[in-house]
Amino acid sequence: MDLLNTLVDKGLRRELPSREEALAVLATSDDELLDVVAAAGKVRRQWFGRRVKLNYLVNLKSGLCPEDCSYCSQRLGSKAEILKYTWLKPDEASKAAAAGVAGGAKRVCLVASGRGPTDRDVDRVSKTIGAIKEQNEGVEVCACLGLLSEGQAERLRGAGADAYNHNLNTSEGTYGDITTTHTYADRVDTVQKAHAAGLSACSGLIAGMGESDEDLVDVVYSLRELDPDSVPVNFLIPFEGTPLAKEWNLTPQRCLRILAMVRFVCPDVEVRIAGGREVHLRSMQPLALHLANSIFLGDYLTSEGQAGKADLDMITDAGFEVEGTDQVTLPEHRGGPCGSGAGSACGSGGGCGSHEEGGCGSHEVAAESPVAEVPEARTDLVAVRRRGAGTDLAPNA
Image (cartoon, rainbow, N blue to C red):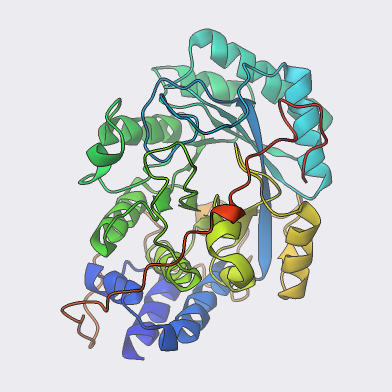
């Protein structure tokens, strides 16, 4: 396909595709799917080889959130029967993190529900970061605490945090339909605060909330402009008891096309398959490793993931390798070693945040995409987390 050849060439040059090209990836047919995966896989291998970075979530405080994000099981008014507990003590959080590190994770993500941290919360998390760093040499720590106030990103950086996560989630145009208690601009501001403080910015999206192809392209282009080092791609987990419980509109093929589009738009960043991969990709998860170079190991915040050993076996069986703590994730022009991908192309051109517009290829986008059959709701695949942080049971790692 001329489209895919064009996108591969642009990805190897770190050149921004046109919006028409990004939309065309989402509009490809199932017959073309393996060609799309193979093309995006060339770009993935150029910058990241066959390495897969493992990340591990520790939910420091679960439930009881005052925000009304429609996708979230911890939201205000949620009837989802999830674990609810207040702040873990630093030693409890460090113990939970150690399980993930022992399972192969090189980054620990510390997450707390809520609008944003108080200064006391930042002190608490800073102590937790110190405890984790002291006991796990070489581990990266990413904090995800909500909207940041002035000076808080700097304090987290000073405490040893390496990164800060705050997702845009959906396009600016549809954000108000998903959340009303804060704005899209609030989220952008927090990502910018993390950047300015010297933290590695991590910001991504949630697919499957009823958004259009245009919405997906909008949010991914906004992410490229913000220039995060990592982009988590979440697939909505439709929890019973939340407003989006009936939004079962993703197929494995759709998920793969979304991941491919993200890779083409942000070719040299850490693309992470995040929540919902087991629910929506299912048996096609190994194919997604050809598109993304990072996954979460084990369980998520309020839902269970597949067994940690199954994750490791999947990576090996698909011909990939777990990225070690002695390896730098990003290519040289983003702070990593030259040639860290399968082919070293540390040439000129903008990174994920460059603003050069790629011209349209020779293809044309169809006026209307074929209407996909709505998949059957697989509520049996949504398992509420009952182990790990906040419980007396061993974690999944």
